[in-house]
Length: 139
Image (cartoon, rainbow, N blue to C red; front, top):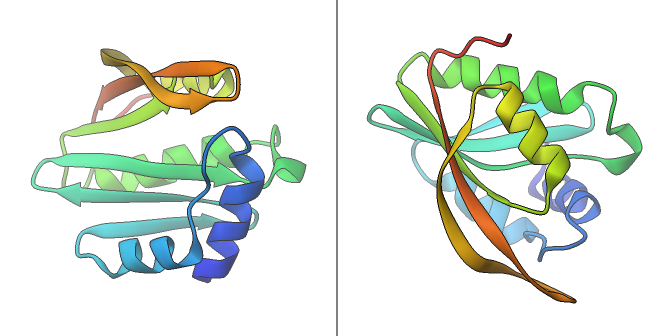
């Protein structure tokens, strides 16, 4: 999956936030410990350092959402991360209810809140910092 494809999917999936550019994806992928988990119409970009794994972003083309791709990507990156990490964490906008449900399904719990972190046309949204143990188990 090329940086241009990643940027296209990200822009389509993130309409409330600034989407990442192809150059930003290129730069992130060039860094050590950064991994890309791919699906046909989506991806998860994450990094693992020491005993922690961080989900940097996950995106699924809107035309393919609600078909299990996000769940599949979550399971895949977390399974791979569990090979070297004991904990996974991420940050998500509190108003992104679909993503919050997905993350909770995979055992993520809110450990901190960054107030008014994301700018919105009608104000701001909090950022939730979430953490989950690895390996994970889905109920």
